Image (spheres, rainbow, N blue to C red):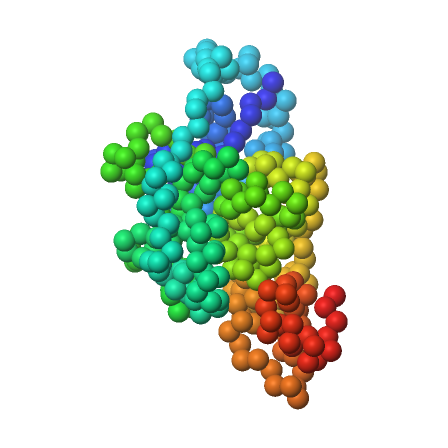
Length: 356
């Protein structure tokens, strides 16, 4: 019987290693078995999905090492591991670790701008931004960073991703010299003693808590939390959720069973998400090829997502009545909700456009 492998859960820097492909330190996650033993030092995934993209799975390993495939692992592994597996089998399921609701409540302050909500005010009016903050439970730190809380379908907060943004451009600050450019609420709370040391992270989809309130709405999946929030303002006919990354398109999507689901991957993620959607046939996920078909070479190099297109249109000068509509608007107009954006409806009427 072959062992079952999964990506090692984060438990501090000791669980992140040097990538064998790009050489990045503390960015490589190994595949480990039920007892936490790695298959091989090169079997894992690099966190730098766009810059490196290295992902060598156990399936790839067994394909390249057929001599290791098909072994009766129960017979060949040491006695201590057999006992560890038996103990794990009979252990009661541990209760889910969560962040107290009052922590979320203290952090969600629509009247206090974060760098991210300051950028949103370049795109939308005050009322819309307050609605987005409230609906998605966007927190703010004392430093003005946004907190994207992960709240599951039962209203339990799993964690919060803390991120820095440029308030003018809306771009995430990635400069490695910037301290705390990305952090996690549970990590900071464990460090301060607000959570116990044995607290374990179990993630869910960002925005998952909105599902119960909109049982009949179709679901739109994107990679980043920022994208989900922006698209929610422009296309409210969907419930917009974020996976948090290309690789997070996985079993946590099972909460969406029975919903009408369309996925909008980043321009460099179409192939990956198409393959992953095929592994979840019971969900019937449709993967949009909008960016794959229409993005320019420059846009591909920038690794754009659908929100980048929408923001580009919002910030560009409107075309004069005597000119044709710009390329960006033509491509994305059909994804807007005219009833929620009078300026779009006016353009459609002025130019006698057919929204297809």
